[in-house]
Image (cartoon, rainbow over the protein chains, first blue to last red):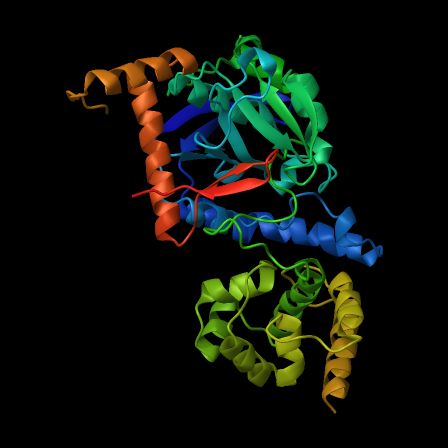
Length: 204
Length: 163
Length: 68
């Protein structure tokens, strides 16, 4: 187990606090999802149901099953997973795939990249679920980690991902990734790619 | 892998991230070891009922003043499974566990199996289940009067449905 | 922790490896590590009963790739 010291923003004070990025999602992380994340998400879903809203209006990703995702890739070198913990609680999860996709942006077309299979932050960090989020910066840390994995594989920071509709602004504006439009081959989600130049700009 | 993040870099970047959503990945389904195994579309409609099942087990347990451990002991199930039954809408409990729960709480077996997702629900059950789930909270204290009432109404409906 | 080993390749194999390195802009080590990740992934998926296809959308052709 490798652990990296990182930061998250404590939304109560606005100040960075020490956090830990751990390589490989553990059984304890999966239990955190089931016993700590789910009740928060479910409470929100109950509130939305009480207002008569259907699953289409529920917070995106509510049905993701991290246990199944992690079980499906157990022992495969092509996948790397990360858990972000702060103040004893699981704050975010990410799954990377280094053998799935090749670049689509013309200047690096055909070269390999690290594909981000999944990124999720804890429900108490999402304004879609709670009124006052607890920690910020999970996306920033995860994308930086994905870039470093890409560099580790000599892929020069090239990464690609399909954003959920509500997160497009983050990948386009904050990460500065290239927007390659809605992808008909992948549930109509918008595909974003980061070139090595963009990766240098983001991590610099 | 080298990951050296400075406080200065993080503060600058995290400020831009703000409260933005960050989820990425497949929207409608989860991958399985066999990628071609697409989950059936009924998943979306079944899940709210499964949540109502979790709420029902939780409120019944609390009404009886049982801890998760005590209930687990009584029906010979792992405490972790009880927790997942109550809180994880994706966890599909074994029919045997549902049967023991029905027995313990004096609830109709068939209706409970439908609610748990083990068997196909009769018409009308989903609507009642949603109404019940929406009215039950998650506070660990005693049941509120409204929760108590919601529970009684729903149990009465379940019993009538079997009659 | 990384371990070092010597690899024996024929001239042709070495040429293919060098071509991949040039094309992908990777070192020989990086190409071989990527190849190992892919080979393991394919092998595990096949053992789980999956099939590996190459699909040509333009020609509407689908060919099963044999992996020994």
